[in-house]
Image 1 (cartoon, rainbow, N blue to C red):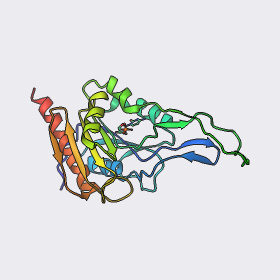
Image 2: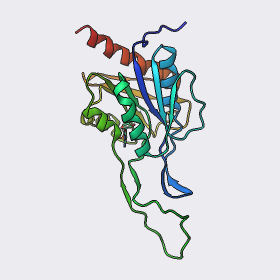
Image 3: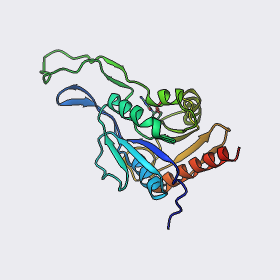
Image 4: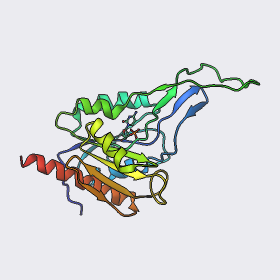
Length: 223
Ligand code: C5P
């Protein structure tokens, strides 16, 4: 029997990739499977939390007992997140949000021409940064996927975006990151603590991330 230690929390979890279209049949995306975010949503629900899962397109079944909002682009994800935010006590942003989108979305399918084609990209909104600016008493958790200088980049993001802790993974390591059922994570927090974890399945990693959420919540309660 799982302890319902998160029964008083409302977790807002984002997961999966976003799709950024440039015509009716084409888009830019990334290899995110959504597995890490879905594992967090599943485990949080088992631990008694109210969970809203906001997800980009994935192949995964919706975890039972979870409120589910399906989105496609980063801008749709932003709108869904901002609508849900007032109710959330914990926000975990596991989605791989596209940083850029095509500046123009053509109404009709683009025709092939003989010349090369240049696509202009523009910046997407940084959702977690926006949440960080209106964080209030919430616990805010982000992810950092890096191919170099993992720890320095992760700490920089955590501070710049006002997160309570950040979960970092090195995409160049076997068994870590997108697609697979396992991950190798390092948890970094605002107290300067660093916890380097071994390879484990994403459900186990989700459990450890939620333990960290509970620890921060309990520390705040006792102050
Ligand atoms: O893209 P970046 O590596 O900075 O992402 C770090 C964190 O910020 C992740 O938790 C991701 O979900 C979040 N993010 C976001 N909105 C974006 C880009 C990233 O919320 N546009």
